[in-house]
Amino acid sequence: MENHTSSLEDREGFDCFVQSVNLLTKGLLEQNLCLRPTSAVKEMMKVKSGKVAIYRPTTEPMLHSFLQWPDRVYQGAIEEGLVTQMEARVAALLFVQLCPLGLPPRGTTVNIKDIYNKSNIKTKYHSWLSECLRILEGHGYIHYKEDQVSTVADIKSEDIIWQDWQKTVSEYSEDQDWKVQIKLLDSCLRKLPDILEGRILATDVLFANSSIQNVEGIYKENAISDYFNSILADVMEMYIKERVAKHPPQKRIRIIEAGAGTGGTSATVLKRIKPYSNHIDYVYTDISKSFLLFAEEQYGEAYSNLTFQTWNVEQPLSTQGIEAGSYDIVIASNVLHATQSIKETLKQVKSVLKPNGLILLNEMTQKNLFATVTFGLLDGWWLFKDDDLRIDGSPLIDPPTWQRVMEEEGFKQVTFLGEHGPKNGQRIIVAESDGWIRLPAPQEVKREVEHVVTEDYSVVPKADTKVNPSDKKITDYVKGIMIEQLAIALKVNRDRISPEVAFSEYGGVDSILGVAFINQLNEFFKIDLNSAILFDYTSVQRLTDYIADLYHDHILSQLDNDQGHSSEDDSRQELSQRNPSIPLQNSQKIETKMVKDNAQAIAVVGMTGQFPDAPDLVTFWENLKNGHDGVHELPP
Image (tube, rainbow, N blue to C red; front, top):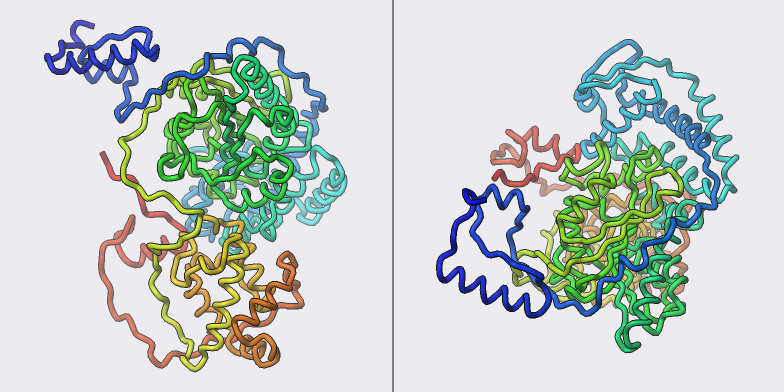
């Protein structure tokens, strides 16, 4: 080491001495060595830059004392043959659906880029398509190597393949362990061309009618998920028992669950630890407010020690009202892999924990066809940018990589449970925090306020509108109904909704609540809007102008025919009497009118500029149409 270190200056040495004595006397360090290393030594020791916060331990390490027990025995049937059979049927349908979208005829070889260019498949699905081509190769339908694709199988009768699949759907419709997966696969496979070509959103299929029922059963009430959730609950219960025995009752155990979603893990854990409710505070979080609203209805009354809060695990705690170093346990079930950088995510998640605090992860650690064909269609599946840490073709992480990365981020005693259960790659990962929180220096950031904007509005530009001033009563009517519907979706007072504020600024308007919001507008006005409209008309005012123009005559007719409800106040009274859960029936939909000519139209005769990831305007517009994201990190 003598050639890779050098002595400190007097001032540096004194500063190190003061800090070291402080940490040593508080018991936060066992030993210390101060030196100035070279870059090579820093790299070898994985030294990280940034501010370090170190918290005094308030509890002793306990993980080692209760992990010496055999894995819980799996009670479900190990149906490896059935899984193989099911995957073969799904691969056959995948082949049938992808052939018309650009797969070459049998005996022909094309580059995958030719498939991209000739098909209408959106750019954001290219990674999904590449992985599905690997699946088809594994089932003998194509050859796929070095971006060259050739079809080697004949296309069998589509009718026969769909008939066989329908028999499978019917056969397992009442099977507790398979029915939800089969139903979700069926929905995605049937709508696959529409999703890939951008005619409908994947969220409209997976969360049809803004409901989580399609996915809720994936995470609970089947043998496999219940097995792993029970293991996690075992660890929780043993930890709480030991803490309660060793510490005074007024010292409450603080638990926070990240990405709790539909509550698949929460339901099992909350039931198990309910006898200890007087000792526990439990915070149920998710990035999506729609899941929090669901959870409040499901669990709010039964568990008085349960609170709800949004939490984006990729963002600093200081911007989200969560106190660093204040929780004893953090739970994350099938969520941390769906982030851009697993190291940064672990760093943020670790920052909520006290020294010796427990992290409990429930994670898939190997790929499977079901997840790729269904959840792989969601944007979040492909968020990751640390490809070197992920299993190829997925956001998932294998056990050795999990262990290495967690240890590098300061987690101790990383342990994997569930290895004696189903051979599907699911694992429970348990570890303790070393109490060191490495975060960038804090910046002045305004804390988010209750998921809705009340001041300092982020205002979107007003869209060009073709609504005549004489039609003000139509726009007022539409705007009033829209504000009321948005307030209902967000469960806030209508006075907190501003017409000019972008929907994205209301933290609760996610893809699921967006679908519910549009469905309610469709039901009320008896029109037919797609939820994707929120991407084009991004505020109440812009969407109001669009609806008032496109459905002008129809809405005017509604106003004329409904004398008792022509004002905004009467509209609110009618709305309060309606059932917001009633979906729009096809018989209620009407044809839209042709957009009126605009005598004040402006002709654009020329344009120039610099465009992201595009050399010219034509390429830029093509990128926009295909959903291509031209924003990249700056080069080092």
